[in-house]
Image: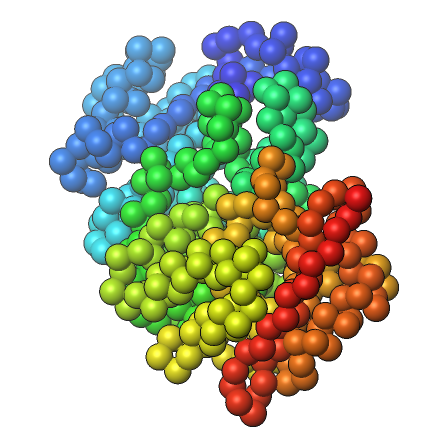
Length: 468
């Protein structure tokens, strides 16, 4: 798209004049006015044996192409691409637009070779920094520009990232309006697509959906996780193996629907420099595995698709064995709840919080809510879980909305800290929390759960109700 708009070798007015850009005053000013050089760094790297040979090969191929256009200006003796661009600009007065895709592939392929990374940054700096012949350089990649020493080697760029996309926020993925329209065209249930692929939030726009997954779901007519086919899946397992203080607790908290506060500004913008869990979490934001809430400066697991990826990645990782075990127990917990076996539910919740497998510390009802949400992790297959849901005369702690087509009952869960499970049931009734299920017809389970600080045990009471 960018090449078509800027490139002087074509006339692309018809492509753009009926779009939003066609209504701007600068539309014709920049349309087809520049030489455009498009570089896919991954392709050049895959065709080279080393970074040194890649840079040499890249410059050779681009200079050769420029020489075909300007044979009397560029004679083929130039060693550096920057030199050839300067000569063409001096002769023609026409500026260049440089578009670099996957600019950061060097940092993924040579993640531990800092010397190679430094040489690559030096090449880009020589090519782009303070170059009068280049009017625009546009680079895409997973990582922001690498912090190199005390300053960035490429500090002339404006950066738009997953932690701060600014004006590009609506274009990171599909907007809610776009997804609604696609669901109508392809016949998928919007609320289910929302549950699977929504969850990225920016200051500029409330809901952004994973574009690749939405496209795959529409084309295949099936909601599923489509991340396992990307190169970043193995990266997730690698970073979960890093045993930094607080990393495991934070991920476990987020699996239960919680959030973790982070400082993304200390991240060094590479895939190996990790001084704290914040660095790993920030990388996972850039990879798309976590969503970042700029206002609260917190991270969260955005949707069901990503939660499943975390679950799959955790299985088989040695020091995550306790979490994996609890996720298996989660299946049994849901069955016990639906079967109204309150005693067994209480015992399994005790298991979740036993000394041997304790992951999250109880200290208030919010922590209890996170643990209960984690305990019911497997319920996400059949339910949409909403915490602190407005209902009746207050907010219900957790409401379980059955998925469309599910035969399982709806559930309203109220949590108490150091009180009683019966008090929880009483509150559900008195504050009419069942009204949260407006439009639902059928059986509803009222689930009251209390944690006793004295006995360090859970109590559970389950009652039935019906909505008609």
